[in-house]
Amino acid sequence: MQPGPTRSIEKTTLVGQGTAAESGAGASRLALTILYHPDLERVGERAIFEETGEGGSFAVSRVEPAFAAPGQAGGAPLLDEHLSRKPVHIVPVGKGGVRIEIGESTTSVTLRGKPVSGNVYLAMRRGVVIELGHRVVLLLHRLASLEGAPDASASSERHALVGESEGLRRVFWDIRSIADLDLPILLRGETGTGKELVAHAIHQASRRRDKPFVAVNLGAISPSLAIAELFGAERGAYTGSVGRRVGYFEQARGGTLFLDEIGEAPVELQVALLRVLATGELQTVGAAQSRKSDARIIAATDADLEGKVASGSFRAALLNRLAAYEICIPPLRERRDDLGRLFVHFLREELEEIGESARLALPEPGAKLWLPPNIMARLAEYDWPGNVRQLRNVVRQLVIGNRGRPWVEITPAIERALGKLSSVPSSPSDVGAPASMRESTPPGERFEADEAAPVGRMGRRRKPADVTETEFGEALRASRWDLASAAERLGIPRASMYLLIQRFPGFRAAGDLGMDEIVRCQEELGGDVRRMAERLEVSERGLARRLRELGLARP
Image (cartoon, rainbow, N blue to C red; front, side, top):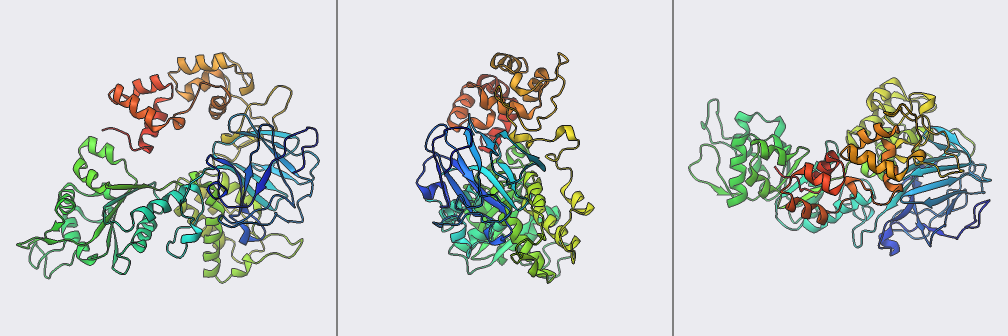
């Protein structure tokens, strides 16, 4: 690697070898993942940053580093003619921050829709989206080691799940671990994350793969007919019953019964399900005798079942039975390095549907791209509350809305589909690095397009760099560790609170807490979240969210 233009630095290298686990590293390392490239076959390739010591950097240009698909050795550089051979340097700084040095490179660098120059300091709480030469979009992010976890690429013939992120690899690990067992499984995840796809993947990987997979949305079944729908009913068992009804359990006999929206199950159905899970027997409505059930149950929910137990609307015993094994499916915002792969996957399907697959071909040298990279960069900054399902809808809207056009445009309908992108600036004063990536600038350096700071309680507009460690701690304590209130006291953006937590030793966010520490504190304080937050010195809301993430929330 070449050193930066004005400093003497320690050399580091990038290797195009899939994941940190494959490279033999035990801790997380920096990675660059291609979110968009004129050659769409290269989307999803990544390069791993081999950090060899303090003060190192790595270079990105037309000819370095080498990118490769996860699990593959070797690889190739970006090679786009619009990128300079003189590199842009990326330098790790502080705790989780990076500095991007443009130096002598003539490659245009765009962050959040705005061209930058000189040195830019960024935090990496959710990754940094970098657009190069108006041709390539990269995600700079941390990649954890998952020793032994199967690659999604190795499992693509068995599963319809698309992606190579560490979050998805954990899901594949779970699928491999539980598939051959007949234990009930509870899938947890936000709406649109692909819970039914995971359930089907478990079924396909199990010994039941040649038997039926039956999916039932309990939220769409009438409560009065729910038991008959699931367990079946004999002729004349209830008013209007003119024939024998075959229930979903019987339809799934020998296979898998997927119960989606399990949190919507009426109480009577919960009792019946509990009996099946406890005894392995079910009783058809109107039948004199029970019979053995031979369907594996996989349930799914995006609801807070523990909260429903506390309110009395869900039975604790049923939750315990269903959750013999839990799989948590990460939201799209936590697997941002999969965004490009998913986008291209859906793009290919939608273009094939309308007969315009030729759009995917590698463009001629110098030709304008059908899909402008800044669209991909913009999508990568979005948090996707509707997750993969929302992304698919946006891709469909984008393809059909631009049918026959020479290149893609963001139409008003796509804008509506996305909603208000919180990461897109509404005025020039808001332009800068993405809100979750900003970091205070060290003395003597400048922060490209620094954001306008809000007015604090003392009537001052401040930059994060002006906040001392002492007053930062005082503001947090005075605000009972509520980050929004502390930010208001200090007169800085709330997003900058996370950056100062990284900057100052002795402070942390709730997401940094380990399970052992939380469990110990929970036991000592009887689960009182307010007192726990005070002792752990984190925000109460953040701690409550962390408890839910770890499955430690108490009713």
